[in-house]
Image 1 (cartoon, rainbow, N blue to C red):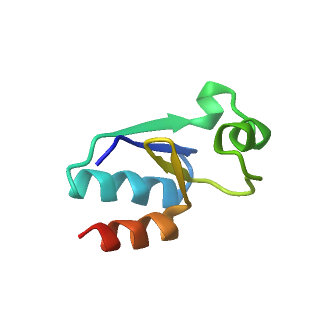
Image 2 (tube, helix red, strand yellow):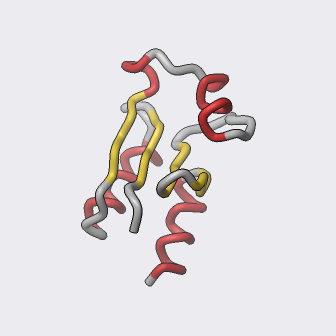
Image 3 (cartoon, one colour):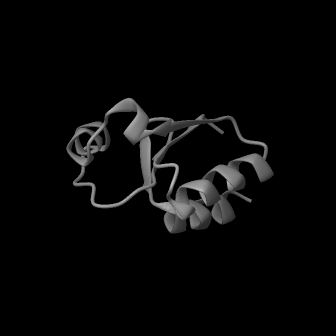
Length: 79
């Protein structure tokens, strides 16, 4: 599987869950804390190509998967 990129915040429970899911599945992933990096939701919209209202925003390679729920479903489908 391509590298997973998680855009999130440290205070976001679903962001932490997404990281744990990657770790449990032994996936290569990159976590980007949008607050530490100074990224706005507008910046994320430019990165993902879609309006962003919530975090996490998760990509596999260059493909936007969505939030945690969509990512969990995606991972089940990959099994």
